[in-house]
Amino acid sequence: MNVALCYSGQLRDFKKCFESHVKHIIEPNKDCNFFIFLHSWADKDLEGESYFKDRMGRDRGFYKTDNVSEVLHVNPDSLLIEKPMNFQTDLVPDPRFPHPMQNVLSMYYSIMMSNEIKRIFCSIRGINIDWSLRMRTDLFFQKDLKLSDYDNKLMYINNQRIHTEYAVNDLFSFSSDDNMNHYSQTFNRIPEMASNGCAVNPECFLGFNLKNCDMEIKKENLQRNIYNLLRDI
Image (cartoon, rainbow, N blue to C red; front, side, top):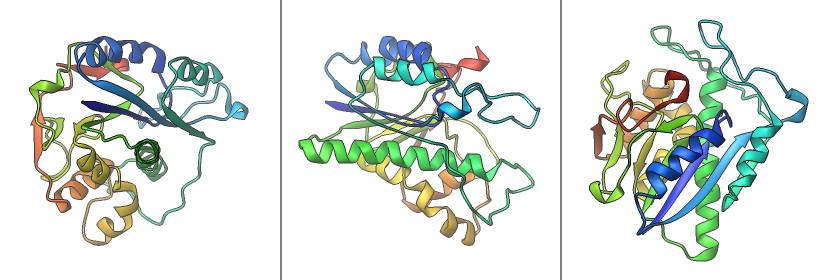
């Protein structure tokens, strides 16, 4: 089987977390061929500056050129690193569960681009992907993820009650290549979803998109069981 690890977003804690991905994803699936794709942001003029502050005023990581070197060290199959973008939108975050729109659009754009470089790479080389995993660089895996235990016709997402009946967790997902192609188009569908009544919130956008794709979602207890955010360990 061919498996794509599609990293997106800020580089954060790539080196330490990637080591856990090798140990708990790549090594337990010895019958699989793994391909690594990444889209992220970097700018040497922003060295040492905070990615952004959360609602509590805490810094959520800093721009460091060393992070780029750490990514190159693992020799990804294809990657794209861009200077941070300033996304323009008239959408206003839902006051019930607000999240800065710049961060929302940046996240979904990066997910889309990581998937796109995977698509181009595989199309040129005639590679068919059986499993595609949406990855973050700060997800630390603590237990093995054995893909033979799962069905790639299903979209696996962390089991979490969040915001609305259709909202889903956006940290980590895995499914067939076709399903993840739809997942990764959330960015392009945000204006239409908002006009159709979707709450303006990242988890709501993702859930609304998957629901409209008539995708079968399988919620599993993944976070704090198989993986966790490094900052929460």
